[in-house]
Length: 413
Ligand code: HDL
Ligand code: ZN
Image 1 (cartoon, protein in one colour):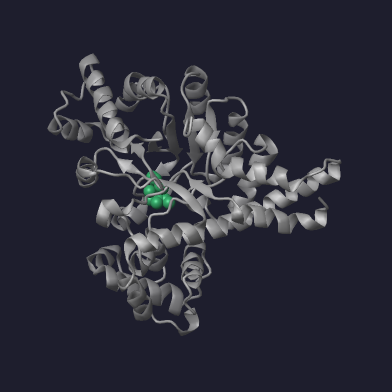
Image 2: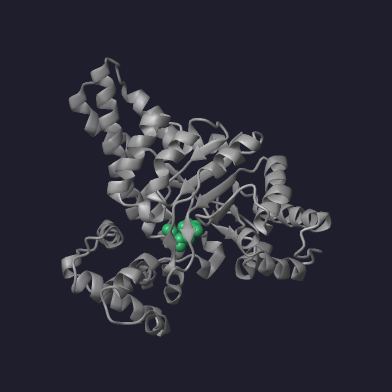
């Protein structure tokens, strides 16, 4: 292939290759209101809430006391009417509404609301998955959330487009709170984490995994995350999570670097970021060669050392440009250094979508950046004297967009 054909070919292949979205907060329609979709949810996204509250005098407490519709109105007027929607999260709303056929210059919020009021959720899931070319999305299933657990108890048939992930933040980051929930669920646990309690935690994980059939276990962890560590988290990891993950061949996804609630009144929008100690991964991956770890870090300053570490351990798979890294300038930087250090052995992106509609913009924005970086790398390779075929590009993008993940977690084995 000539260099002059690269950009068009790579863009076409990237757009045509379905993606398996390895981390979202979406749910299938059978989870009812847990699945967020439509314009008011799209505008009430916590990324837009904090952007609104730094541009408008409304306090967080006043904002959260408003109805969802009034919150959405304030977000719309502040970020889209009084200001230009040029940030990544605001531009995303523009991309999504355009893709749905709205001419924003002539569209009012109430017209968009009318469209959603007359749309059925099952039809909309089909439309969004088709528009975003997503073949499946991994949910975030909180094992300690009673509302979600109630749905699992009744769930008869599964939508194959929604894969489960056993999310265990509550266990690892709030063990005393978890003890109360597990005891209420009939598990004989105590805070002391003696052998009996650890056995009961493993039974709890096994019972949940039996119901959910997850593709991995996951937890978000603070920048101070340490291993080994003489703490509840350290003991739970050593005696429960790592053995269970190994025995069940269920990879453990660690999302490291979130500083919870640096501004508490902002609630879900109030988290911050901190640089983590990548040495934790050297000890976890090196000390547990039978375990598999999916890892993403929240701090931009961790990315290069994470990619270098991923060169050393075949049981470590790097994924995504998480949260505030999911912006074109940083996706480009991270994808380039990952290709330069890891070739195509990594998972370039996940959407982290909380609202179904976001799949449309998160994937169209990321696909453009990833295609541009890939085209540049193939051009460098052609300059070095290698012949690049379209079939090579198709194989590479399939690897990046789904096959690396499927193989690593044992899907379709
Ligand atoms: O812990 C996580 O999974 C994070 O993605 C948080 O949910 C965060 O609030 C988020 O939505 N980031 O995109
Ligand atoms: Zn998330």
